[in-house]
Image (cartoon, rainbow, N blue to C red; front, side, top):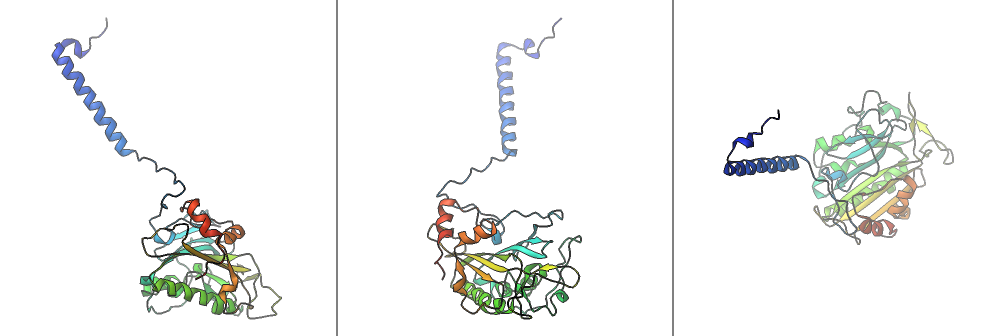
Length: 303
């Protein structure tokens, strides 16, 4: 014998009321489920305002994928308030370092000593100061010390050796230094700069030995790759909350890591697109192509 539904025992009026209650309960449940399931963001279209990330140092995205996972030994992500970098345990250099720069980042912090990075996984080789002793190469900052000189704690982080590459003294102390100073000049004018830089290739010339004798590695116990070149990409925006448009200013340099570098850093200017082609990276990937491509294609947009 079939079981009766509870509706069979209700009057017509009661059945209508019960049905309405059940429909209302169903609507409430569906609404609650919808609230728990995030709606995916639509893909940006050409001309849309750029998407941004929470960490201001990679506001418009990272140049390449990196993971905060010890298994990612050739692209280990180090995400800090001062800068974001991808570290390579095979080369013992950063692949790239990204940071933003404005006037508030610049102060009078006291320089400290270079030191091994305590936050590197224990499985990685921790570069030490004595790895550079007697090599003829400087410990060359990627994120510049003075770019994080508003406080001693921020400045101290720039002296971690994960933020350093073996850099020829003339490169580091002449062209590269003056390029860093120009970036800070722009920041002091009220600009907001988004900067990425890093090493490329292998084989540089330091202060010891003949110019034609390139040094491939340094290091006391483990090899640290000496890059052949260093590069920097800079996007210049008019203020902190500004977003790029097709006329925004961007410039890039590609410098040899040797003693031929002088004080004229502009002679090493290239387009951002050239740096992308040589490195395989994609800079500011959250900026729509319709905006980014004109910015990246210009080679003579140095300030």
